[in-house]
Length: 292
Image (cartoon, rainbow, N blue to C red):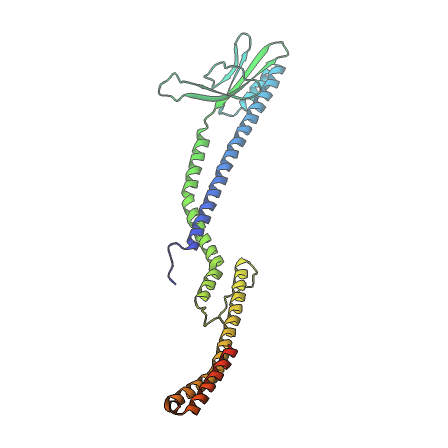
C-alpha cells in the first residue's frame, strides 16, 4: 500500500513528539528556576548564619575566638568589622567597598562603577549587623560576596548548552517512539479500511476484523459488521423475491406468447380460435396482475 504524505500516523507522531519535547524543556526550565531560588535561599541562610556567629563572638569581646572564627570564613566572603560611632576598622578581609549602608536582617545587592575603566562593574551582595559589646562599644559587622558567581554561571551555561544539544536527539527519539506507538494503535484502522474495500453488494459475507479489546475501534467494527449482516439479509430477501416473481411470471408469459403466435398464424381467419386465444390472454393477464 502506497504511503501518503498526509498520513494521520505521521501527523499524530509529529504532534506527540513536539508536545513531549516542549514538556521536557518546560520541566527543565522550571527545575532551573527552582534551583536558582533554592540557591538564593541557601546563600541567604549562609550569610545570616555567618554574620550571626560573628556577632555573638563580637558581643562577648573575645578577640581570640573572633580571630579563630574569622579564619574559617570561606575565601569568597569578605568582611569588615568597625566601630559604629568612630568608623574605626577593627577587622578587615578583601573588602574594597568600605562602609556600606546598613541592611537590617536581609542581604542586599550593591552595584557601583569600577574606578578602573578596564575592570568590570562592582556587583556584590552584603549584609550588616550591629551589636553592643559587653564593654558598651557599638560594633558593626559587614560581610559581602561577589553577586556574580562565575563558576556557577559557567556551569549553568554549559548545562544549558548540553540541554540545547540534547533537544534534537530527544525530538528524533520521541518522534520514532510515537511513530511506532501510533502505527500499532492505528493498525486496526488500516485492517478495517482494507477489509472495507473488498465489501460490495455482491460480497457482503466479508466482515471487518474485530480485535476483541472492546475499545472504540472494536465497537466501530462490530457496528459495521451488524450493519453488513442486516444488508446481507435484505439483499438475500430481495433476490428471493425477484426469483419467485420471475418463476411465477414465466408460465403466464409463455401462455400469452403461445396464444399470440397462434393468433398470428390462424386466429385471423378462425373466429372461434380468435375468441379463445383472446380469452386465454385476458385470463393470464389477470392472473399476472393478481400475483404482483
